Length: 400
Image (cartoon, rainbow, N blue to C red; front, side, top):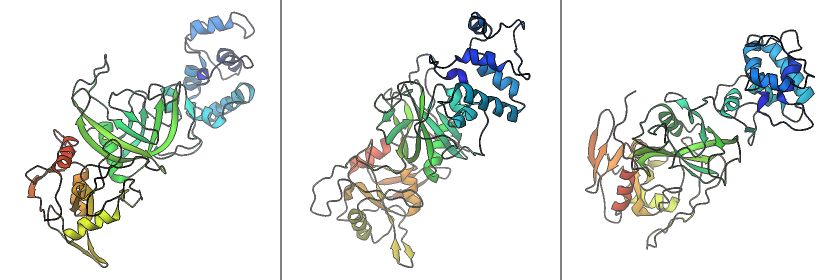
């Protein structure tokens, strides 16, 4: 715990803090011959380093006081008052495994602020900001992802600050760290897909190994809550299938303009706006969306369903090549489909694939085929369909 803070001339070293703490009657030293020097002995630090290379306090405090949290809390408070007043007590308590209040693991952690830094993964875990000490994704398929660490571990990662293109876990050689096989939709990868479907926020932690423009110089830093806005699979730089996720800082503004193509019908919007709905779907140019839906009389181009509501017919406009990083697709009618809500969701997840001959394959436990319905005045660009297929190149979808 406290051994992870830098030693400065005005403060005792963590080693001497350990020796001060052992003067309390509850303190016991494990793995020594009990011939401990006095804290004023000039050889005390040398002896301590030999007995406990990690500093003693980190291991012993947790092992010896784990059964008595109240006593541990008082010890940490005492150390804070005497030696570490320039550090926040709430963080010291969290790192000692003493939470200030209940926390289910999702959302903003109590007592931790955006920008707080941690020396190592172990302290990050103790503070419950990111629980695994090795894995980059914390979460399950059932509950979704709690947090991710962005530290430059995967060659396909891209960091734009308020937007991150994150690579899933798995498929790397343990020695070389190079991608050597396809990633699977399991464990943390499946957790992030669940977060995409539910819209639940994910904590982002950046490590010093990531993009220098947005990462801390040393250690790890909690950078707040992001939302998974898109997920897909594709061939990465090493030509193996990897899962990729586009995360955006909650409350941020999309600064990436979409490139539009000059046409005689609605020109669309070069900088599509964003609005959060109950499903966190991004709202683009209403002129383009309305134009396409009216052309198809609000009937799904896949199944033909036309939904009626008390205020009229309802359908959704789906972009084939997505807008924003890293796709930068245009908000134009040849990149938009008119779909029912079910097939829009399936299309966004890559479970609905449209081939160049306009045959449609619906993947899943009960595969189905359709024929995409097209009409004059709305010609779909085949290059966008090819892009969608390439970016959802699933080999298989594992069963639950």
